[in-house]
Image 1 (cartoon, rainbow, N blue to C red):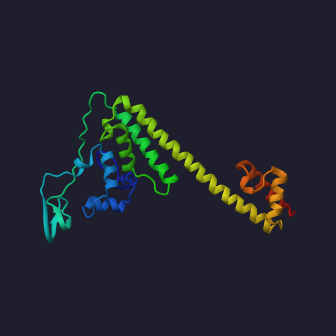
Image 2 (image 1 turned 180 degrees about the vertical axis):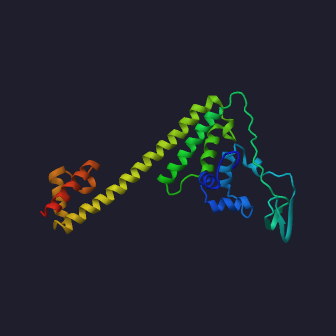
Image 3 (image 1 turned 90 degrees about the vertical axis):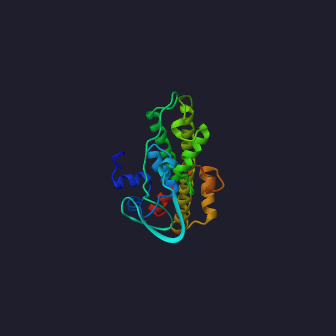
Length: 237
């Protein structure tokens, strides 16, 4: 938090967790999930291995034990580490041909965009970890900072295409929702306010648009039908 200049509130937002969850991690009373660890590793420009690695041997015992960690918080359970402490370390060393810090930040921004639009477009969106794993596999690396300059434009294109596919899916979803709501409103107004049967509405649609059903109308035609029906409703026709 000190290195990133973050408050508890802002860091919790960046990690996609609540402030109370972050406080439990800081107190040592709970441990982050794998997805949160991936986000922490990316923010700290390190790896999960180095984030959680400790040189202290693990104690395995069948007894219920309690140990104090370095923050004087009690850790209880069957498995524990002595003086448990997480040391975030910046271990990346740039090599000739690797992407620059500015390019790395651009990739982070694109990954964030992918995750955000995944949340909007899909019922089971990809997590940050899944997106990073996907691009790392695509680039043939284990850590995104190992992506080469020669691969950078392809990496950007890969993420941009991912965003584009989700935007198309989101647009289709929004259009489908709008069509359903608009069709329902037209049917209700035609039946309840104009006294039309379905056959009468279909006849009006064919006369005006040469289409057999409301479901055959384009978005523009459906909007025109909606406007016409509600104009008749408001005039009391």
